[in-house]
Length: 310
Ligand SMILES: [Fe+2]
Image (cartoon, rainbow, N blue to C red; front, side, top):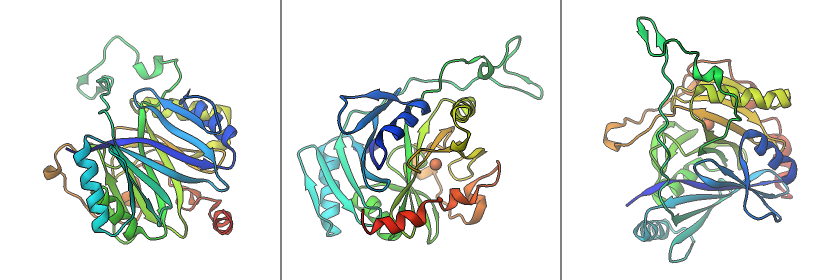
């Protein structure tokens, strides 16, 4: 059958407790049994973030859900054809990508069925979609709770090889590319679940979490900034590639986390036309210009120095 989705990420940080508290503020819910790691859940996806101790911040593990053992067999033989070592169980296959320094596991998992939440009705010129009522977005008072994990963006010291590992090895599809720099890859109907970009070192640029609509993107980020304005990175805006609304914030370890809504969805591969993009146009359609620290996080130099000992 097919790959379905990202099921879980394991992120290593030097400050687990502080970072876990941040993701609770972000709207994730504590899950699992307390131990060395802190586990957090989304509303629809369940336990999707594990934070564990690491000398420098990085993505340690990426977990992918697949429909059945045929998918696992296919991935295992594809990895073997690429001469990439892999560990196999009946229901899973695991391999390591040196470029991103991430261990990727594909395992048989149930499909995630999300409740059908229609976007709110809007008024427009000549169109009264909502009458005699205030907009739902201004009436909401509850905390923003991400529905599920959407994607991760990774720096790779060998973008080409990491892309081959994920596409030819694990079966990700290419949605769009920035030639020589990055590729938007999907293992679900989301426009992208992993973006791998060429970088001087392997690092996690950001994780991205789905919320219902643009009001939830704005309300979530506003609540985060009311508690600590220094968390702000970039937003509110709309990406061009992927089309999603976004707002990026910084966790206490230096990883960015994104609220997103209204991402492009690809259900028929034959009808999607991958394109190549360059420059700022691909990055965003509207919004404030990205700060330099979004493009090259402030701690990269320190991470590179520390990388030799981590
Ligand atoms: Fe993103």
